[in-house]
Image (cartoon, rainbow, N blue to C red; front, top):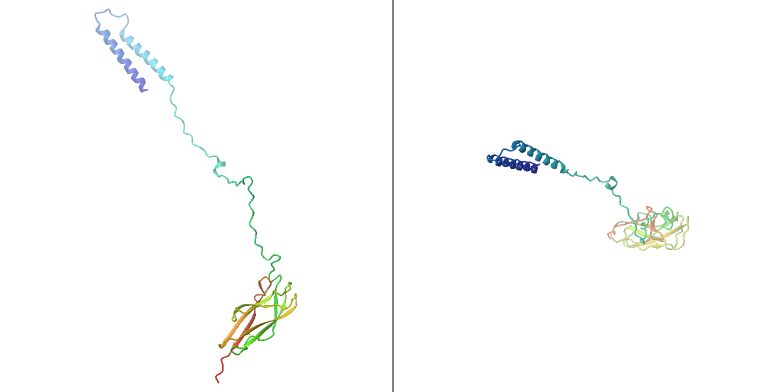
Length: 224
């Protein structure tokens, strides 16, 4: 548009200069055509041509801004694990089984019943440094046979380090056996206590909490 206005102004100025030149030549014969009308017609013709030219020029249309739209299917991608060719399938970790065959528990295989204290009942007075034998009579209450690998072992209390006492014959279910531990009373007066427990051929304690107990009293040495 500015270019069109500039061109129109230049055309008008040229027409005015032409009129001035014609007016300055008074000695010549008067033209048969009115100069003013000619100038006006020239301006109108030039204006019409410039208008047509301007209309022929295509108007620049702004390019619309495109806002990208995310495909909903792509908004939450799903990860898919694919094994490569030749790769082995993952192997699940083994599950730890409890109480299965071959690992009997005390309720399913091993148990015992204390029938009686054969010797040294709890509370027996034993002299300082005296050796004694404590004997229990037990019954096999479980469905498993007690073999020579079954034993009586120290659990807690005094006389730490007492050697295990093994079965000296096979004890089938329902049968009984007497087991004996040999101990020595301390030389210091006081009350002494220890607990023993049965243990199977796999080293598993059974019969808990049916401990076999030893409880003695060592008196003070009388003054002569």
